Image (cartoon, rainbow over all chains, first blue to last red; front, side, top):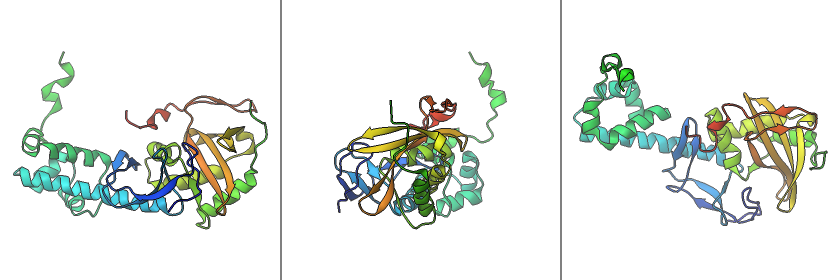
Length: 149
Length: 138
């Protein structure tokens, strides 16, 4: 469906509704750039790829972004657990959250902050190495990091 | 130099913005990278709340905040500088369109990225935190 709506970036009237799953990212809550992995129909400009938000698009975008972040978080934890031999308690302490909260974000019952999401994403890139190296009892003072040349 | 009077009456703009907040009318955000996304990036909120913040910002506009008229494409937009709203100074640009029903076409609502001098002599500066938007990455 096309509309007469004018694009705020290029001025053309070529908006058309499209599913942007897997092709859309935007700042969302404390995420500088959240990546959409769920279905969402948005008005996309056929001339410049800009998008528009009208009617209840913002609500739908929030729902889809929230579901995407929760799903990605769950997948990161799945990857870490399947590749590294690590308990939920140890993983939670590495990430800096409680085991209860880890369980909630694993089961997609809560949306993590960008900080937690990003840390899980990092650990998921190499679970075996990083869970071994990221010891939560590591003492920054003993390492004297600030005194290194 | 722009024309010194706005094209759209603020009373009308505020009526439409209030109707948006009441769920009776839409605002069409036709350049979300310069409006919704900018608000999300600095206030760290979801898109719906960002758009409501924009509508509330429109309600906070005063006639002395008007900067100039801007010709863009085949239309006239009113440009305002909104001072100290949610701890930022904002660049605001919109027009009222009457084709598929009457609505505000919101093109820009973002923290000022350069200094703005209003006709009454006030200088709105760029907030020191405003570098947060436009990609937001540190």
